[in-house]
Length: 116
Image 1 (cartoon, rainbow, N blue to C red):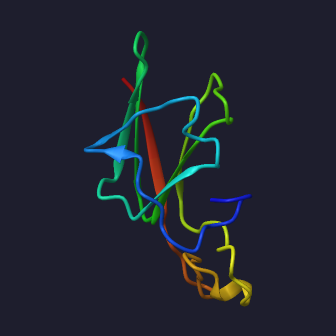
Image 2: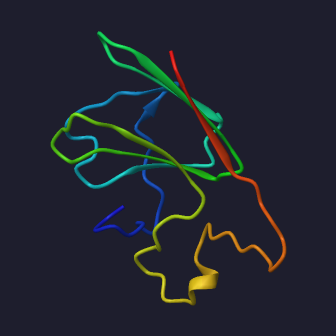
């Protein structure tokens, strides 16, 4: 992301293997967006504290963010729909990753959080 908008080309993932190393600089530009992650769950464990596990179904992206420069929180959010690309000037309904649900239809999206 740049100024809240998607860059025109995907950026290298900060995930190494199956680990996202957190740092005060990681979110300087904005959220880390994992597009169609291979997993449907993540686990966060503080060095000297409890852990949580979040799992999800039906979503395409995972947004991970915190206040730039470091903060006492980390947001882990299953997303289906993301910011518009920097160069996008089309109609809202043509926005990438947008989920359109026909009148009368339904779609089930879910997530679960476990304290470990």
